[in-house]
Length: 204
Length: 309
Image 1: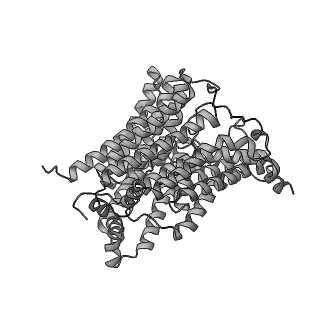
Image 2: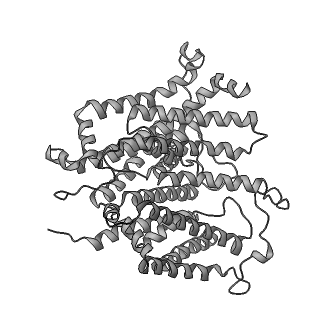
Image 3: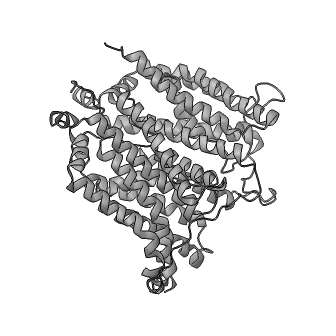
């Protein structure tokens, strides 16, 4: 758990090393950013002259696939069991270690896909401040969706709306954009408490 | 050998103690929480917020000690929030901790931007000055740093004493091992956990305040740089013992100070980012090696509910 939090810094430093070294864009006036993505690797746009690109469809498709895997396959069942009660899962014959490693790899792959889509669809090049906390937002989105893959779509739209709204507020009346992070983090804590009250009854 | 010469410079050892101080506070704070059975991943955010609020208080005209008190109070407030969510409401300690980290750090960036207008160079305050004691301060190596360092080092000893040689410490430790047994002995696990989390968060807050009131003289976003996570790793490294936590923090600080100086010696040949990675990779390696041998408090991350096993 803490290992992944620490690896964050290692990964960002690695990106920083690559874009100041082999991938450096010599035309970027000294800004640390990478060479632009090759033209034929840029994701096609959904709507002309907007930034809406095919990544959205991919994301929704993946949400559906993850939902199906989670709800309808043996692997989904095993990972759920491992999460709910590792001891019982092991007793029932779930290969704990390999399931956990598979889930971790899949999750890492999806997170990597998120980064790749952002670069190939929106930005067109790599910088170290590419992700304004997308990873942490991912945790929040997952909790807001109550860990349901389809709910993730709605939760992600809510979170994105908050961030875009904060950008607008920042431009209009100069409120720091961090208000979005505060709102989203508060919504996570609120959601946690709300979930608690859906699962328990107050007994007098 | 230039690479070994670094170890002979007094500057290195002063830097070690400077880097170690917030880590010692943070690690002892996290250790305090975990010794009562609650993992506090809010540490990163609590440190950030306390660093900001302590700095802001001084920036707005209070004296440094008041700034420190404000930071400690902020730590206690977030500790109370964490305790309310994890002890009373029995929510996941991992997710709550991360939530508090996200909330506290974004709140501190927001308040900072709201109150302090954006400027090219961040505004500064006059931080704590090193204490010079005539005679002693002039001793080579030990002199310059030792007296700024006494507070946190003594703190580790005091905490070790409280945890292992007093009945209060026994109450805290038994709560982390078996809260039901604690309850049977007349110790209220809920009170103990609330107290330990708040005390631990105060320590984290003081560590954060040290960053802006002593190590640097300004606050800027992302300045905490994962120190909180390093502290959590150091707690495991220390097997939940304050004396080893002190040692671990010093060791980590030595690596950090050494790589900073190594950069200037061999920095041309190797990208500087590789050096910056070293402390994080070191913590992961230490975690992997020590986690096997560590004796984890048995009820860590396990919620306590009366009358329910």
